[in-house]
Amino acid sequence: MKGRHEIKHYISLADYYVLRQRLRAVLKPDSHTGPNGAYQIRSLYFDTPEDTALQEKLDGVRDRDKFRIRYYNQDTSFIQLEKKSKRGDACIKISAGITETEAQRLADGDYQWLKEKKEDLFLELYEAMDRRGLRAKTIVDYERDPFVYEPGNVRITLDHHIRTGIRSTDFLNPDCVTIPAAGDVIILEVKWDAFLPDIVRDAVQLQSRSSTAFSKYAACRMFE
Image (spheres, rainbow, N blue to C red):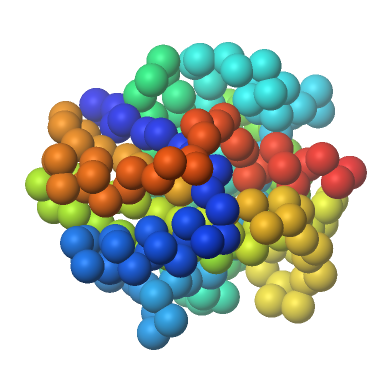
């Protein structure tokens, strides 16, 4: 599978409002976007007892993998298991649907059922949980304003209101308590395939932005 290009930037709240209006004029909203132009994401991240995924992110390791499960807008009828890989400057994401029961079993550390699945993604997670002790670590909640542009398969997101479950893995409980994890940080992410169209490049130009290796997972783990 060919990787996608990805860049991330911190932006200010003022820039968020300017950029959101600019993007609405040029790009289309994601098909899952709600009436307010955003949707909620809840993820449950997995890591080893030694916190390998967290440490590799903090150390800037260029080739790394992380596993998570997630759902949107509190709708647990559609839950995704995802493996996101970083290979140099390219990002690769593989995903597969799982049921509420399967999600709860993973959150509880029950993984033997994974080896009965046919898809490679499930078998990879089984190996990681069986041999490396990968387990659920923390919930990460946030809101996302998503935009898409067909030429170049461009996807732009504005992530904000990041919250952490600290050590909670009560992934399916909508009333699970989470707390703010990153203050008023807003993250602009731009992803594309072979090329980034000029109209999109121009739309995301902001003088005050700064490139960053910000990780929502790492930010949420800092509260433990």
